[in-house]
Image (cartoon, rainbow, N blue to C red; front, top):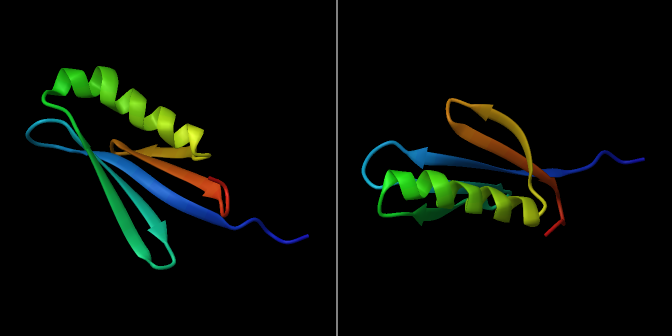
Length: 80
């Protein structure tokens, strides 16, 4: 039986200005970043963060760790 292969991503918010959330996907070809933004912090916390997390879950990403405000996810290679 072979070991599963994993891919990883991390979601974190930029600490200044309007709420920005960066999701960085790590691949064998390098990192790819998506940026999600809202006009204000409250909207970001009540709508944007839940939306980003829900969409990652729908795409097969599993939360594995939270450290210093960053959320770390993994999924089996080939899941989408």
